[in-house]
Length: 214
Ligand code: ADP
Ligand code: AMP
Image 1 (cartoon, rainbow, N blue to C red):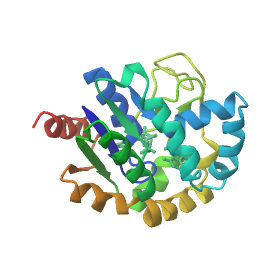
Image 2 (image 1 turned 90 degrees about the horizontal axis):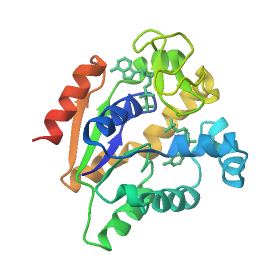
Image 3 (image 1 turned 90 degrees about the vertical axis):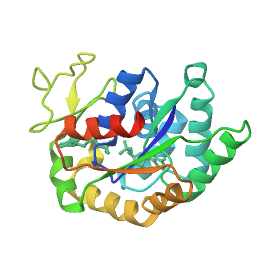
Image 4 (image 1 turned 45 degrees about the vertical axis):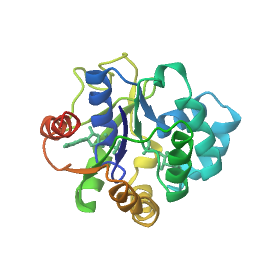
């Protein structure tokens, strides 16, 4: 089962992707998490990505596509995966479709988590992310068991640099310009499904499970 999560930054893609990954035992691949891992470890890729991320812009397609295709060629992706934050541009979607097509494969489900812009800014200000494993929480809607500490790995929870209000509005603009057209792209491929991302986390999850299990 190969799944793509679509939706604005802060719509809940990562939250749902992690729950799906746990339920179906497939890897959760977040390009944002891979970039942040590289930034933390001071790699050349991290240095290049950081300048774009700090400004709320997208990292160039060439770099992002190479990194993602490399990751999905790993052994643990053989039976499927869930992509969170990729593709984010039409050229990225073409690259993924083209690569999968080489072996007669394709994306099975593209799930659009729909949340209006007005809800997003509030969500992002309250988001806390684990510095170690990337899991996300919310100070109000998805609290960790112990404040500031990740339930999954015990790592420290922080406000991401790019979740500050100025950067969030830039990221929303970028989303509407470059990523929203993917909804049409996957609609034409007959794999698009939408869920109402303003509902409670568990309600959104139940809706997604219904879609995946037909
Ligand atoms: P994305 O991966 O799309 O950027 P996240 O999954 O990180 O978004 O969610 C953004 C923030 O909103 C997080 O703090 C998360 O805990 C919270 N959140 C996610 N889904 C919901 C929901 N259905 N209702 C309320 N808050 C949510
Ligand atoms: P995310 O964790 O998905 O919110 O991504 C954080 C940031 O990483 C984005 O604002 C982009 O700067 C960068 N990024 C993540 N995924 C991609 C992608 N597929 N294409 C380009 N940039 C990306």
